[in-house]
Length: 315
Image (cartoon, rainbow, N blue to C red; front, side, top):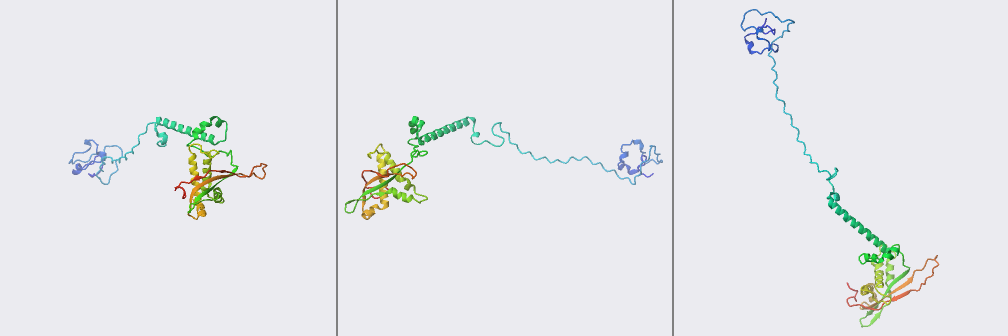
């Protein structure tokens, strides 16, 4: 039998010791192999069962791969830092609180009280203003002084709600002047209807001037409210209303060219006189009301014009 046969009783050559035994014989008992160099015949196969299939050549057994250390597993990325949860009740899950909700409870109570005080004040002011401009009623008759004390002087109103007393008269303001000429003589001009001039300027004008609409009317109302029927001042604002009306008259006369027309641009306004012309508004055709259409006049005394106002008023 060849020394390279894989039988269980195969005889090995001198180089058998340098070769590793096959895996099947690696754990066999020592007496199954004959001592090296014995010339005796090979021992018969005593193992029962079929003989193993011969292998063409005895190749050295494949070395068992040593258990290599496991490949290092890539360590996962460090987790993103998680924001520490806020204490319960600090803000809703949707986002941080803003406005009044961000304040502490003590300040929230203070803000709520302040808003309540402001709301009450606004309601009281609106109510007082309504009672002041509304027609006379039970409340205003019982508490009219309290309403007036609240409104005057800071919140004075000059209009009436629902127009309880609509104007039924046309009032026009007229003026004439005494002009001193170059020769020292004083000339008196005719009456200038300043309200009629304003009416012509407003008629057909889409954007009339506020001065043309209200200057004369407010000045005359101011004068009437601070003077009695004898044109004597009542209260501390009487002289102020006279100065206000006089200056408006001088400015209008200078602007309208009354002085130039009377004296040829060389005269000086020395004094002025104002009067009002009041006439009733004619009733409609379907009305049976009968009113007088004769105008009435209210003439004021002559006012001497100070020297600083004589040439067009204070500028």
